[in-house]
Image (cartoon, rainbow, N blue to C red; front, side, top):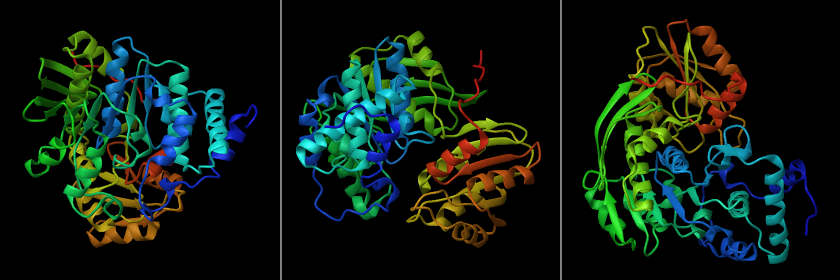
Length: 442
């Protein structure tokens, strides 16, 4: 059994395990959660120490998880939040409220997982280990509720050893088809795997052809967007959006959320319904606004600079790119628009750039993140030129951000996008640590 580890030693052990997040997704063997269940059992099944709200979806699951955590925190609950990937430090993935696990606690949690790995003979993946470390820490600090963001799909995701009280599925679109299957129905079936008998399902996907898949998943009740809840108003406001939301239990008017993009209205609505369902009662409007005021969402349409306006958004698939292009119209910028773009392999760069180019882009600065999965920058640049946008190739993400800043004037806008790995490196190069506060509309 490992002795006392510092974080350096713990991370060195962690990085000795296969990292599926930096490899092209590929299901090479029959999926199973048996190794996770075995390791969880040896840890004392910490995933069962607190009730769980489990969140998946093609897009929006991270935002919905953060909003849900903030709303629960406003109710004076101790909230464990598990998200992925991290942008700058691995500690970000495991948090209490919005505060990441500290280095000593992370090292201790990883050492505990190392000990049960040694006992079991099971060789977990890097993501398995981080998930187990999160469960262990949340149990140790006795959180009142755990909010889990799925890593990939749902049914065979490491987080699915937990049984959710409330499951949330934000939407279904084509993504990771080489792993999840070629159709939206295949993907829906995989994501429906987080629904457990006796749980409640908050369902943001409204395609009637998919509803039967979710209905058959075994939830006690299914709360469907457009039928059981909806966003009644969704307007641009200074620093975010102003919403009106109807839920099964209440109507909430003039709700401000400090996030950009109309799509965030659906994420807020799903989070509000999840919290209502968790408590079995409406949320006090003051607590609702208190929770939303505290929401942070690094790397998701995050404004990090002005004159020029600099925005970071980890849009990584066509649906997210469409949302990013539409959200740019929320900003009244008189000048030109510049893109810093890097993507992972397996994406269609022409399709992504066609969508982003609809925002009337002046220049694309193509780059590649420091990841084995990164698409070569020259390939991104070629795709931009194919859709009629001038492009240049940068050495790396930091160089791309610098070159875009040199090209842009004070009235222009720079969007860094295409991958959360790119966004994370951009945050480091810009020295971003926290989102600047914004004034709520009065």
